[in-house]
Length: 288
Image (cartoon, rainbow, N blue to C red; front, side, top):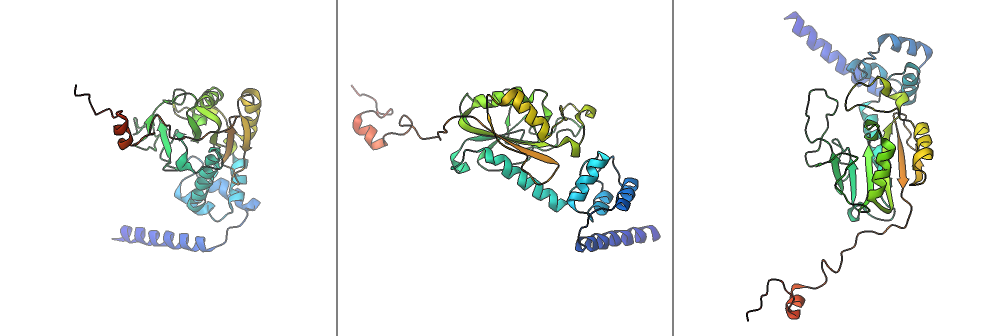
């Protein structure tokens, strides 16, 4: 009976410690703290429960600086992670043409994973369910349109905006894909991107996963690539406005005046009564 009792005591202690730490204000790291963390953090799995427990006592800024110094994945508390996700989605949706509600626009979310973002945004991905045990791609929406990012089932000039959150780093030809996406946009349409900051995540040169990161991404790198490949196709409307360090945002705008969707007269010009009076109702046949 002793081992179960000890386990129960340990569980209660961990709960109490977690509750106590949440009540303590976060503080900046000292050099002594950094030494302690380097010796006690599990760098091979940053989401380890013990990592979260001992790192949560420090401010997010300190944890970001620690990640930069140790070249490790930056760790956020669950509450902070939720806020990061919310800010990312808001930043990406700025690609939608201004002055219009999303319910009046046609937008797609490429590489959607399990992020719905908006009920008015059409999800697109290469999978709806897991296809292997690698864990490289693990979040899904079952109603996603199945398509590859370089060959989407939308005609030229048909979309109002495109968003892609933590997706573009997974393709080897990102600039070509962005130019292709631009061809699908109407004038004035936008592309909203969220990309990881490789300095706070990991180096793509060591990523061996088929669905992993294919290039190193940062605001500085993207700015250079924009000037080399994209400035003739898009205006760079915003770059790197997010307050946290793990990711950065981009909004590209296709030049031209935006025109929203309108119902055409060919679709709905006359009522059924008007068509009947005109003798143009397709279900009425000449009885001669």
